[in-house]
Amino acid sequence: MFATFDSVVAAVQAAVALQRRIAAEPFEGQALQIRIGVHLGDVLLRDGRAFGDAINIAARLEALARPGTICISEGVYRQVRNTLDEQFVDLGRQKLKNISDPVHAYLIVPSGALGPVPRRSARHWVVAAGALALLAAAGVLAWRHQQSAAPGAPKASGQAEERKSVAVLPFVNMSGNDADEYLSDGMTEEIITALSKLSGLRVAARTSSFAFKGKNEAIEKIGDQLHVHAVLEGSVRKAANRLRITTQLINIADGYHLWSESYDREMADIFAIQSEVAQRVADALKVTLLADERQRLERKATENLDAYNSYLLGRYYWNKRTEEGFQKGIEQFEQAIDKDPNYAAAYAGLADCYLLASDADTGGLPPATAMPKARAAVTRALEIDDTLAEAHNSLAMVFQRDWDWLAAEGEWKRALQLNPNYATAHHWYGMFWSNRGRADEAIAEVKRAQELDPLSLIISTARAVVLYHARRYDEAVDQAHRTLAMDPKFARTHWVLGVVYLQQGMNEEAIAELQAARQLEDGQRVLAQLGYTYAVSGRTSDAQKALNDLNELSQRHYVDPFSIAVIYTGLGDKDRAFEWLGRAYEERSSGLMLLKVEPLFDSVRSDPRFTALLKKVGLDQ
Image 1 (spheres, rainbow, N blue to C red):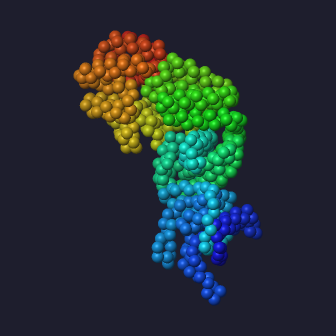
Image 2 (cartoon, rainbow, N blue to C red):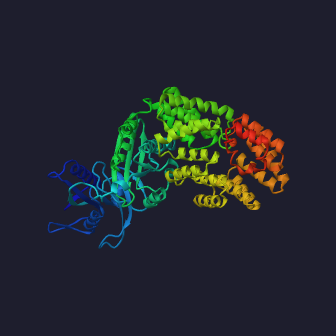
Image 3 (cartoon, one colour):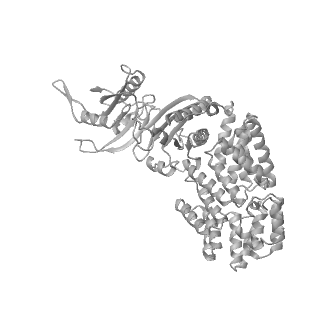
């Protein structure tokens, strides 16, 4: 059936309205699915009949559409993209039967009228923005209907089980303002967090999902790299106090949409939107929600929108993993707490900032300053809400830094009970076991973290570290090379590869890797490792220069005493090494967690002072 319109905008509006009307009102109890094609061109009339290339192209476009969607040509797309607030999918250039030149085609997926929609291999998100409508000379509309018992693609038995894994890709910021990036990132992270707490669903971790931010990767490649069966993607547009959020859940195997929705709400409804998206994703993937899980999805972390806004900014800055980022994160989390003193997640975020800020390389805050603040914040978070897995994970790290290994183990178990998909908890729990010399348990936890976060460079490197501490050097080298294949400029992996080479007697190769690490990231611990390697390689003057550089740095920045102890150990000056290890103990240096397994201290391991220090930090068992 064909219809012509004087306006291409009117043609597409009619097509969208028709799809929605049919979806809302089943015909004789059955779902009636319509495929529509729209093209812009001249229509010739002769003897009461319409003909011409425009009609032929519209008919071919209709064949490209899927039930419940509208396929349009590029000319139509250009006319309506800034007029209609609909979701567009770029299909690329298509060869149409009996049409000489390829036609660039797009799909329109009307919310509430969705049939299974294929994705082209290269992902291309387009969301229309409001603008003045442009009129066309003529629009041609073609449609064909398809009747079925129920909308959507047929599902083979057992297919639902295969779909119980998902990745939430970074929502696109469509606000036209980079300052609103935190909102789209925050929306993504909140949905990841909500979904990851569902026991029946495996969710790719944030780090891996955000590896695709701003990239136009094939949907199949994303599924393969993240080991998931479905992908959720979306966009956020903020205008004054209103939000326009679009979402779509795509099955990797066939590119079909499993669910799609658009939300046009007040900013105050953001909590309800996030909860609804998480529940709809779970429903579409046929995940059975336990009663407490559904309640958890519906629970609001805060009723204060300003506090939530500050919280999202805090997480945005925290994720930058820089000294400046931690400081700004602390400021935003404190503002969130001022606005809502019972905001548990904000206290947990504040604790996370202080924890990572106490790292000598990334944060620069002395542990004696940062750790009490981290402990106070995370304790308050759990007083408000004991079900926060993130807070239990942070408290476990606080206990570990206090050498309370038993309490730390209990908190990690609790965190993973609450959120078995929490990759960071598996990662940190794995390093906990590595520090205690339990390599098998460590590798098992880090492998689980990798399954959840396969593109995380830090987790991939952590596996090499565990193997290094287990003295499985060949395996550690292989793992480091696998990580560098993902990103040859990741400094920490070069650092780990350097210390492994040193234990294999490949001193020159070790120095080269450590120098490469330092060029990529000028951290004090890499400098300490390099100084140690110079020392044991007979380059005493270079080792002394590294030591002098650390002493000079300490005049303007916090330097971990553990780093200085490492170089003195390499120089063979045991007395000075133990002097600085003693300072490291007094300052609660995180480096001391490695004492039991770090090969760099093998030369002093038989010294009674080392045995005494191991006992003081609870690693003598």
